[in-house]
Amino acid sequence: RKATAQYKKEDYVHVSCQFVVGEGNWLPLTKIDSVVHWNDVIQVRLPCEELSSCPICLYPPVCPLSPVCGHAMCYSCALRFSENCPGGDCPICHKPLILADCRPLKTFPRTSYKVGDEILMNLVCRDRNGRIVCSVANQDEMSVNTVPNISSDWGVKFSYVLTASPPQVLTQVLLSQEEELKSQLAMLEDNDKESEPYIYKALEELQVKKDRCFDEIESAPMAKAKFTQNEDKSPGKKVFFYQCADGLPIFIHPLNSRCLIHEYGSIESSIQELSCKIIAMEHFTQSPELRSRYRYFSHLPLGCPFVLCEIDVVPFISEETYQVFKKDIDRRSRDRKAKEQKENAYTSRLSKKLAEKEVTYHCSAYLPAYTEISKPAKDHFKTAENYDMMGVSPSHSPVPDAPLSFAEKLRVGASKSTPWMKSVPPESNRFRINSTSSDISVDGEVAAPSFQHSFSASLNDAFANLEVSEPGPQPASQPCRGGKKKKNKGKTISLTGGARRC
Image (cartoon, rainbow, N blue to C red):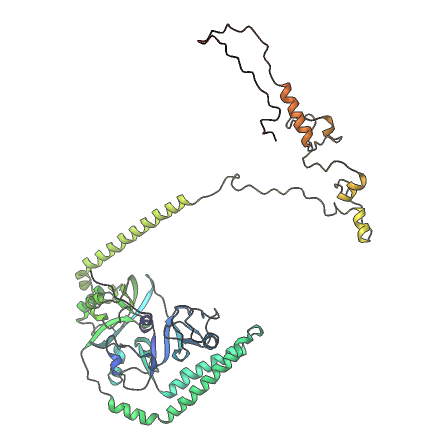
């Protein structure tokens, strides 16, 4: 069994991001599996659909910085974190966070495609052993420049590394950061004044970088002459393939490439742009096995995710070519339908199992309905004595049916507490209480009997209902072996209920 490849946290940054470096001889960066040194990076560019929030302030990052681990955070938040927690780690991956290793981060939108969408494919090329990719229309420009410049449109889309001159660094990197910080300072709220000194500190650091950049601009002609002397690039054999026009790692399926090669003779002789419909998408992650299998995409670094997109190539080929590959096209169509049916069947089975486990309460025993009990009026307990204690006179007389308050009961001398049970009609035998007539009030309401009365009444009923059989003729007892007669044990009635005597 082959061992799986091991990746580090830095591999994600080198695979997913685009780096801006200064001018120089960057011929080694054009080779496959070449890595940009972090000290040479001026700016990091990340294509994303939505930038994640800052892990420190939990808001969208303003003037974001990217440490070596690739997690975005605000410039002011990074300064505050480094001052309050010197030598601290990244809040997300716990990798040592060094402020000097943070680089400016710029994001640009990335389109997400799905089956059924329209996509534009460009014909691109690269050197057989090279990593720099460009469109066929800009092929001559790539033969002059080793690494594309930040101002070239094709380089921004397809290349993983870009060069920038000192004036371009000043205008597109430093001044852009300064504008974001000033807008953040202008929109600062009163409850967030703690970040104000760190924003001023970030502006001071940017001013130092700008002064350094001005010094590099003055000495730029000498460096450029030195660069032209060291530039040397020998042309090699090129590899042609189709890639998404946005620069995303989306390529057409090998079956579509074979159809185009059969139609036009070779890939480089086919149409430069294909506006087509997506039929199927297969997602992969670059590995040594896939690199040897799909040699057109061997320039992708290990661990890089890419997509093989099967497109509707019928409008771009003739009927004769279609009949040659009709068997393969139909077979892939049947495989897609079988896979879709299998996934639908699995989804339905899973939903049925979840429905069986789901507990639904339709009975009122589990979810009893709430019935609002008749609430007493607000002024039920506002008696004359309450108004006397407050020193005010009642605006209206209390409700006549309101229950008596505790003070009124003491003044009247009521010996019984207010009954808690509802009034029971005299003819109803639903609740039978063995008690004397003193437990029943005049109004017909049954009060809670005292413990002594209830116990004595229950004891009297027990004696009254006790059935004592009259003595009848007893059969003659048979003599025992010893000649002695056994005495019959009588019944014992316990008046204490069998409780233990103290």
